[in-house]
Length: 505
Image 1 (cartoon, rainbow, N blue to C red):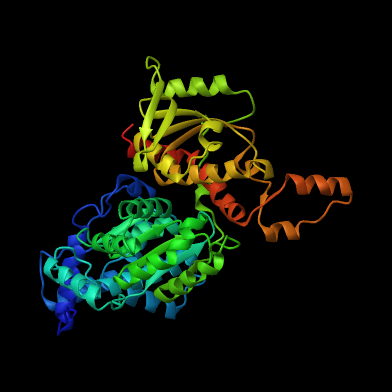
Image 2 (cartoon, helix red, strand yellow; image 1 turned 180 degrees about the horizontal axis):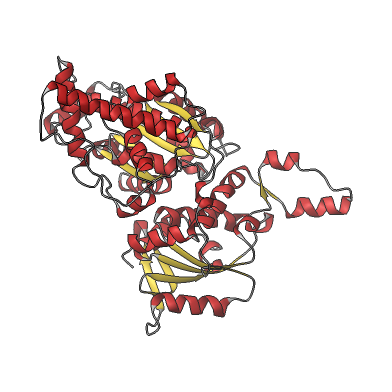
């Protein structure tokens, strides 16, 4: 189907403004948790298209939008914003999109003053937003305008004469340090797109669990990955994956073929990650089989780094009473747990069903709160699927006895990092006892580069002890900053208030 071409600028302007009102006529967020992350106020239309539709009125409204864009960017960083930049940004946001909404929230005080690095990423997101709006029919994004007959016909002919149908729009791969706002920016972009579009926003862990589950269902087919890709593309042409991080060899081995099929089905990828694409799965088993995926990723996505050094999670105000440091604090944590479930409530063992029929034993649970000794949750052969299953039923975890991590408990460290990721994704609350602060828990986890740059001790005995205590692991080393940042935020007043609203507590 060819894209719709409108012959006059006035028609395009009216179309843009009608879409603008449609998107802003109700809350632009699809989930309560994302609402609070970047502001809870109800979005209102930037312009009112119900009064006058004459040409001069429309032009004046566009002038208002241009003024909003320039003022917000100038407020973000007047020293680094040139006249050329201001004109370019103003031109980019004539209609609607993540940059317009970002500026509005700064103006309304819902977000901090704009970070110039975030604005660079937003301009890429705005570029993608505009291209998608212009190519909505070509990309088959609107689920209600895509003919089922067309889809069936396309599938039939693809079986007889396989052919590539890559999207004319390139996606976006955002990467950068922890706490720089990657997830917030992607959600801002996602929430500004119509709910009628075939789009999905999902954490990478959860996405891969879904893929493996689908593969199990189609076991025995000649190419189950092709069928899985078709199923995914049927539901989501625009696929937004948060925290793209490949650590599992099984995931690494299927990603190239999976995304080859997805891209051939017209899927557009938007991803966030802490890692440059060239550093994905670095040092992993059989990485040579993973390298073609990196090439495909860079071909189908614009790669953009968010260079900000600010960790916005650590700017939240600290909240006492959920993270207890020290040993032998079991009694204290159980008292806190009892307060959380209610003084007259008795917690009992429970069972949670996770993916593919697996079950997880809960030592103690009541009123959405679960209690675990660290060993039972992170020293057993559990993974992301178990943790996702846990937080589908429980919104709060009391975790007893988090140890300092090093070489001797590296596997437990991997599970703990995954646990924190899943908790953060589900906006869950953590009450815990730990041997040290978040920073100190992971201090002995280092990357190869960090280990090589560490100055040796003068004493050979001390040097030997240092080496024996260190855990040199690139994936854990890169993940530790994110884990420390998230643990810090999860104990903040702002996060706990958001948790209470998200879970109606």
